[in-house]
Length: 168
Picture 1 (cartoon, rainbow, N blue to C red):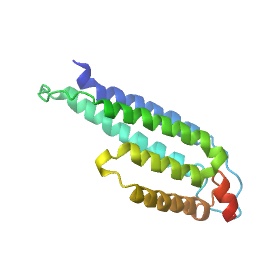
Picture 2 (cartoon, one colour):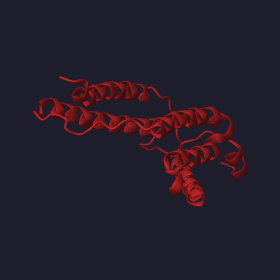
Picture 3 (spheres, rainbow, N blue to C red):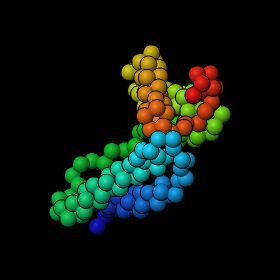
């Protein structure tokens, strides 16, 4: 039994354990009382994401078990990792850490716009980068998420410069 055949199973089990830990901690989130009763609270999105992670982990485990049970040998040549792929992962982690660090100062709207724009640049191939389209998608998506949380779910998001200017 080779590691190649077991890696999906191992990853699935690790991610399932992590999703259990994540769901447990999501239920520990303290919520503020609301003016109007509603099912939505600060726990709803982390709980949904934890459930989604658990479901995807289960699929990964099933795929790993299928690989172990299959009698076929891997005839596909192994694809060597490209340096650009590795650097995209490193840049993604750096941008996520930056996003976490600037969120308290700049607030949700501005920090999310910066994060999304940079992430699109990192993930898009150089020949297909359309900065105007990235900017439009970034602004529209951020505003939709802000309105969904602030108006629809009645949840406060980290305030910053823009939120202070618009009065939210």
